[in-house]
Picture (cartoon, rainbow, N blue to C red):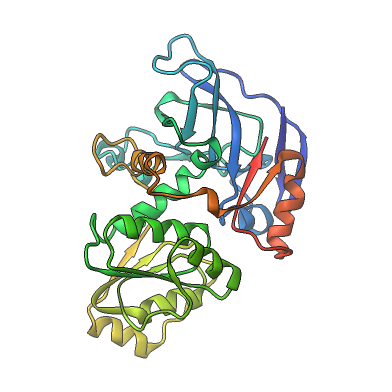
Length: 333
C-alpha cells in the first residue's frame, strides 16, 4: 500500500509500505480521510515518534474492508470512526474505564503505524459505526470533536448561563465554541491573532476579536504561552481555566498574575484526549457523532484543504512553514 512514512525527524516520504495483515480478532479499515492534528507537525518535523520508521496520523475514519472470522458486529462496507488509543485493560485506570489514562497504552500514529496510509488494522472495540447523514470527512474529525467536548466537561456537563472565552480559533477552538453553545453557554467568544480564523468564527455565528475582560470559563485552545496567559487573565472570580492546546513552549507565570489566580480562586483543568467506550452520555465519541448527525456540530466549514496522500508531504511541509492559511486539513488516501 502507499503511505507517508517518517524515517527520521523531518524525513517524511511518500512510498510503498507493507499492508498490515488481518490478525485474529481484528478489522482492516480502508482509510477514507485522516485529519492533520496540530501535534502532527512537531511530531514529524521536531520531536519525532517513538520508533522509526513510523506512519503518523490518528484522526481518521474509513470503511471496513475485511473482518477476522471471529469478529462480530462489523462487516465489509461498514463506515467507521476509529478511536486511536489502545488501552491495556489491566491497570487501575482501565478498571475504572478511564481508558485515556491507561498506564500502558499504545497509540496509532505515534507509538504504532497510523492512518496517513491506505489501510489500518484495528481491534473492533476501537470502532464506532458512523450514523446515516454523517459524511466520512466529518467522521474523520470525531477525535478532535470529542476532545473539544471533553475539555468543557472538565468544568461542567452543562454551561447554562456561563460565559466562555476561547483563546485560539483553530479547528479545535471552533469545535469548543460549538460545544459551548450546545451546552447552554450564555455567551461564547473567540480570539486569535490570525484574522482569517476570526472570519471563520464569525461565519459560524460567534463573537470574535478582542478577548473579554472576564469569563466564567477561559479555554487555551492554542498551546502558545500568550494564549494561556490571556486565558488566565480572563478567568473571573471562581472561574476556570482549561488547558487544551498542546504546549508550544515554556511558560513563565508573572507573580502578579499568579497572585490574582489565587485571590480569584481560579480552578485549573488539564485535558488529554476524551472519554470513550462508556454506556452513557459521558462518552464523548458517541456524543460527537450524534451531534454531527443532528446538525448541532458543523464541521465541514472547518475544512480548508482535502489533499491526496501523494501530496501529503508537500502539504505538511507547507503547514510547518506557514505558507498558506490552513484550518482543518484532511489527507485522502
